Image (cartoon, rainbow, N blue to C red; front, side, top):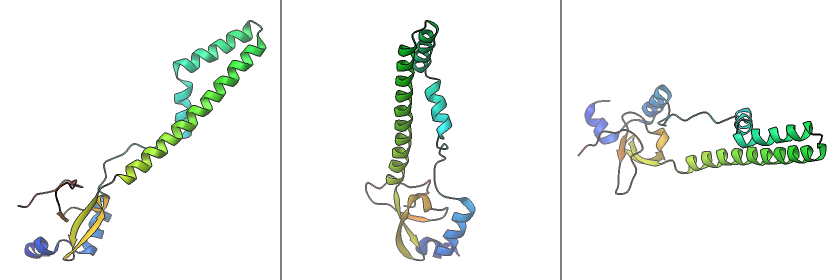
Length: 142
């Protein structure tokens, strides 16, 4: 494609797909979602949890089996609630990230198309209006 056509018609859809395949999606690197074992380990390593388990062990050593079992049961209940909340939080953050991803108005094959910001590739002509977020690193042509 020569430079003049590039300026007026943008990329062809085939070229955009090839660049997307070659360079990948236009996304910031994200951390891997925490698996269940990491969440459990995080809960188990909290100082308050360790203190409560230590108290339960002391109750056992002192022969107070009933109090030790009540404390252990309470700790397990709180741990389960904490794990469930952590999973819900991770899922909510992922959904929010997907919801807030910007969309971009680009010119491809000479036509304006609105695409997800993650599908913007190197060489796309992006049309910006007042209040738009720039969905990628871009050169601004005046």
